[in-house]
Every structure is written in structure tokens, then in C-alpha cells.
Image 1 (cartoon, one colour):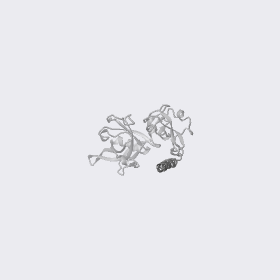
Image 2: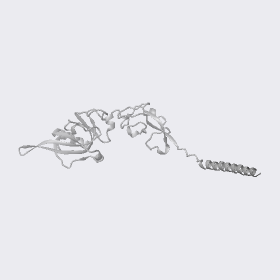
Image 3: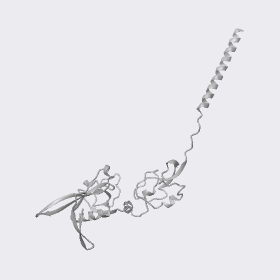
Length: 253
């Protein structure tokens, strides 16, 4: 009889323990259930399908639509909702600033001008070529889009003696091209050009033209950290007499 009672109590304890274990696991399972994360609104943005180089012409294989978080779409991005025919309308345009794969396409980095050099010019600026050599361009290591100072070297006659002088004409001038090269060739050595094309204002064009007629010009490479400074004219000025509209005029530089 005693054995029966002990067996009954043990069996009941086992059943109670099993029930408690099942209840505990059930409560844990309910506690771990999380509410679904809110869905992110997406938009289709036009991006570069591959790397797009400076001067490359766009076609339907160069662009593709890509899903983009709607909250991260910038005002200059091209969306499929706003411009559903963008693949066709942008066909044939020229790249004026390189794109990396997956980068959103923006109008300010494209040009509708067939001339690459003209499309690279800032509004109100002019492109002017000057004669250069390796010695006059920091050993030939000045490349397109570098910033340079323009130095004039000339000979002045005074008191029966000739004196060679040099002075900085213009500071922080953008280099547009070396000969016909507008971009630096990747994986290739530095090419020594014969002409350098500078981006100048109309007034600076006259200064450079007069300086070339009265001496030689050299380019001094500026640090990248100083590229944001406003281009200036050197306070040390010289002058040359030029003919303009049939009249003689002193042009200071």
C-alpha cells in the first residue's frame, strides 16, 4: 500500500513538472514575438550602370533604374516617377564629370554641348593655350584640373643694361588640358606636352596674351589644399604696350 502511494505521488510530481515546463516555454515563445518592422518607401532612381568616364557619350546600356530609399532621394536625382523617359531623353549626352557604378545621374554632371572642352568651361570663362615645356611645368607633372600660378619672365633694359626679371602674373588658375589630353591617363607615365590650356577670365586672357608677347611663361603647381582660393592677380605688376582697335594702350599685368 505504501509503495502504491509513493508511486502515485511520484507520478503526479512528474506530470506537474512537465506541465510547468510546457507553460514556461509557451510564455517565452509569446514574449519573443516581435512586431514587424515598418516597410521603407522606395523609389526608382537613374544610376550609372558602369563607370562613366569624362567625355563619354551616354546610351541605354550606360544607365539603369535602381531602387533607392525615398527619404534619401536628393533633389537633383532623376526618378522614374518624375522622368519615366529619362533613358531615351539622356541618350547621346556627354559626361562632363566622371560617375562610379551605382552613382545617381545628375544633370549638372552632364553636357548637351558636343565640344568636351567647351562643356568643361565655367560660365564666363575662356580657354587659352600657352606654350610649355617640361622645365616650365614642374618637370611635366602638372596635369588637367591641377591649380597653378602663372609666372612671367622677361628682359628689361635700364641704364644701358639688360636685366631679366620674373614675377607671378596670376594665382590659382585651373589647368584644363595638356595638348589634347583633358584627363590623366590611368596606368601611364606623364606625357610632356607642348601647350597647356588654362581657364581664364576675359581680363586674364589679355594679360596672358601680352605676357607671352613680351617674354616667356612658366607654371608653378599649387597644393591641393589651396585649390579653393579665389584666383588672383599678383600685386607686383608690370606693363606692356599693345595695339587695340588701332590705338596704342598700356596693359598692366
